[in-house]
Image: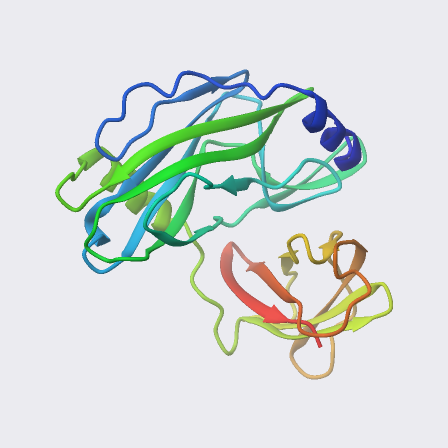
Length: 274
């Protein structure tokens, strides 16, 4: 498996594998076909009157292939959404189902080894008015080698253009998201100490193992969390190395997104460093 640095180098020189976008059919783009996967965008326009619209990036992985979570770990690159040609879109955020952690050839990575749909949360500038979602998503699709894939899409969002297929797949994608963290299941503190983060979590059973996935985006690139001896009381403690980022040596207040898993139950949330 390629390291993050070598894969990024490939991304800089390789021509991304893309397929024909095909004709726009309501709120579903054409498939982008690449070795190991097919990718397309679906949007459920039912929320257009309120301005809150949901979509999904559907990634149909072939057997034996994988793709990555928002912080891939030692190898791979995170999915990247780019919407330069869109209209009436105030905000767009890609969300992630709970990932799995794997070790290949001594490298630890976080992501998905089965077909997955990444939910896309949209906010319209002018609710009730038609919108155009035009752009691309950049993914790493890997098996023995990693293939950079850029899937382009151009989809019109209008409340009068309903699509049963889009509604079904987008609804399923949304249901795959972990519930929000709660007062007794989630991170409760995130402190920076030198080149690492010290994170404390509350979990349903403090005596059983828990797994943490965390991302600081481009501002704070972090490695794999390591569980250490339990903190005082019922809190669990994780140490996370800081490996780079635009705010690598900055102060407090960097937002972190995370997924915390115990006994097959997952919670997701956000917390700021202090």
